[in-house]
Length: 240
Image (cartoon, rainbow, N blue to C red; front, side, top):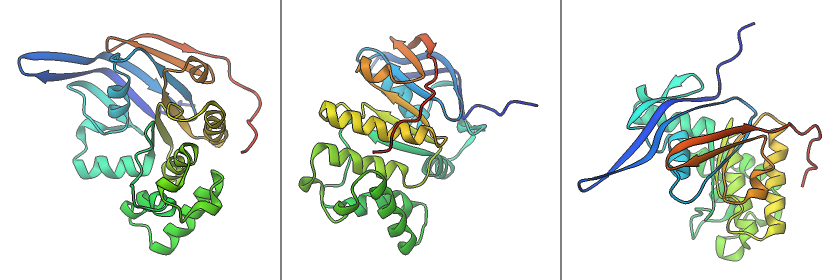
């Protein structure tokens, strides 16, 4: 039986930025494949290319050279509308600083991806309330960011990322702006979904958080210097 293609596949991807006469090589000939259901941590010092890699994986940026495929579709051949559609259907984003709208309630924040997907108002509300309940915020749907703790804001961001049932979550320092206990709860939320088939690619500076992943990719100066698998866990995490 032929193995299915990887969920995401990069071949010799380079990303170069120009600043006046100078060139910054943010990524250099990066090649990697990530299959459905993988749990991957991307580590490296500041300036190693982690955020650039995440932006290309998330179809927010384009390589200067090389090829990138998502669900076996060549991202380089997609127009802007097709890239937006693929991103909205397949990819959820979680950021360190939450990226919440200042005046929108938790419910509205969570509904936003569904609005762009053309889901009806009634169905959007149902799915958003369900997503908030899954992250422990069933009673906080009407609250705005200033009324929520840092951990609650990150949970809203996770609910927003999961509401469209994406196949891939890209998380950029998801525990960087919250306390250790809340960080443990956030990671447990992610890890529960991994046992349901979600793929997680997470950028982190925290070695303890990275050590929870099943695979660790290390970047230095825009290049992959190591790609190490780790033994899989045999026990599903408890729901939180």
